[in-house]
Length: 452
Image (cartoon, rainbow, N blue to C red; front, side, top):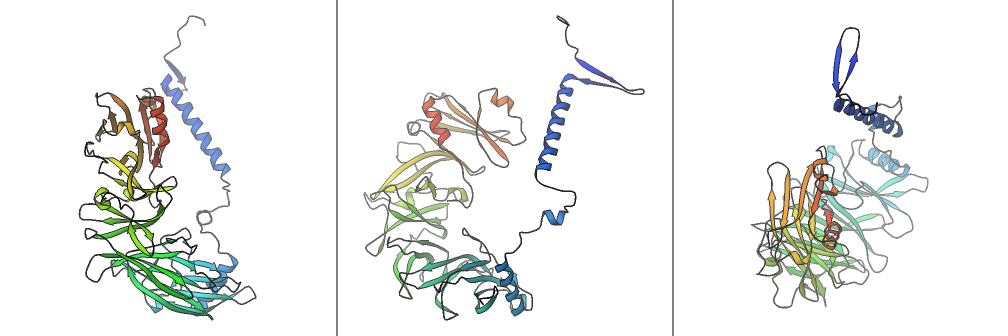
């Protein structure tokens, strides 16, 4: 009725029991019912049926006809005791790859597996199609390790090709690679050496990929080597010694510099964290990418050891995170990283960013904040980062919430969602210009492991 106040509670009565529920609880019940209804509808939309069991819902994808034929041939040759071995890295991590290795127009199958009856090492087999939908083993060998880090097929300038396998071993701290040729249904070892990392790159830009790897030098330290396939033979075309401060290798990555030059980024483990060397290939020689003004790239790229602080792509170009500011006038601050690239022999600052290695996020900040801003982090309770200008005025505040945390108190205070992961949501309140706000929103990213 008009002018009459709403009751503060609703009384529900049964013959024997009285329940008193306040209005907030009524609203909560309605919300829970809505969530339950949505969950039921979503479950129905997944296609689950009453006759589905846990085994059928969680079963692995079925093998293709070709894969089944490969498995049948392997089982017949090894008394059915084979287990597949999967490459640990690469865009295709299948234990069975179908490729035209010998350029005869037919796809062979390359399979990696282990036979417990013959030891712990992994095996590689080449299987040929028999013309009737089945495969037979044409060549097989035992590798020097019990696992596979990566596998690639490299084609030369004619009809030649090599199978490049990076083997892993539990008994030693480094890997080894082996390059095999396959002709007349026989695998032959063309080259083998220990390595700490390996990548492919067309560093001389002739349309044919070389493979590059790092290996321990005979007098300690590490070497970076480049190998080329030409006319059925493998040849080391360049070698370069890495700096003495490198105690290990974290990554070798191919990327573009800001001037479009192809470069190699070698992330190195040191006694205090990480550093990076960057190389280009000129006139048959591996050279430093920064050769003007006496740049010392390893010193410029010092930072903590974290899988989130490896060289990464910013758009089309590769950049290196560093805790070293671009100028002595800029005070070094925790969690503030400077992303460097190189142009025509000079080091170039691409972006300044706040990086959290705990949550795996990078938030770029405007260039005009670099020299005058101060960053303060609160790690007790809700993780909060505030950036102030030189007059100690708030420019922005970032908060990290769990996915189950109530965000309403923050959104009511002017915070907006920047991004989220499976476990966290990232909210930011901006007290800066609209242009600066747009820059930060555009340059916020989730640093996913294994993506460079």
